[in-house]
Length: 381
Picture 1 (cartoon, one colour):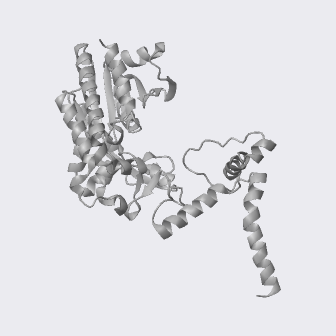
Picture 2 (cartoon, rainbow, N blue to C red; picture 1 turned 60 degrees about the horizontal axis):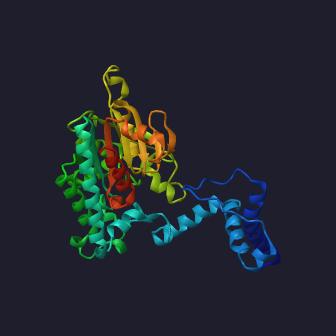
């Protein structure tokens, strides 16, 4: 190699090494966004003791990596190469790449692979949950109020043929997720709780209609899928959404149908306008003087699309997210932390006419909903 070519090669290497550091100092506008949420690393005041005990060094590394220039571009390039060569996300990522590149949330795949030895404990929790729902439903009904449940299906339930081969079972008949679902459905039926079954509705749909109901590149159902399940749950009223739909343009970087694709942080997946199916009844077709029920919508992130569908049909809608935070759905803003000891808990929960409970299959055995229903059931005594 000639001397001039060697110098050029060294200069290029120096540029690659120094450019991120220069970007960190200059704070240039040329980097790209990274999707997801990270807690900012804390760098304690350096001391001789923290350096000597090696507590400072890992803190500094995390602090430096979070602020290094062109971090977004480097992460996207690394992830894109990983996907191109290995057809998968990095180990530990929230998103797992399935067959043909379909993104899955890791929670759904872990749900699919629930060890069968854990099923007795899980089904016992589901039985407790459905018994609480039955008791709460009966007490609310005696007061002239309505409670309905929507079963929100796991993505791995809807697209089992796209699940990565290493997560698939040799014998599909031994799928633990189906045992959990059957326990949930049986418990709701046994306790007389009205519900819309997203699992059943979606599983019965033709394969070529799945993307109409559940987003290919997203974590959640589509507007149309959410509406069909909600319509099934509210078939007897007091309000019933219409599920006429149309393909509407959507920004891939803003619409929930592409949230998992964005979270992969690959080049190009969050760029462009794409048409997505949108269902729902426009507000202007409703009679303004019609009496509308006051709504409490409680559940997981699957309920936000239910909120969009219900907002024009109800009054003073409030959402309870993971039994942690109250939101004003009319104003689109946070209200407060959910604390049963606080005075506003009774206002947001007890002063309602319609209760829509979103039960995501993946988390049906978790504590949040059982804790909330236990408190509500006690207050209704």
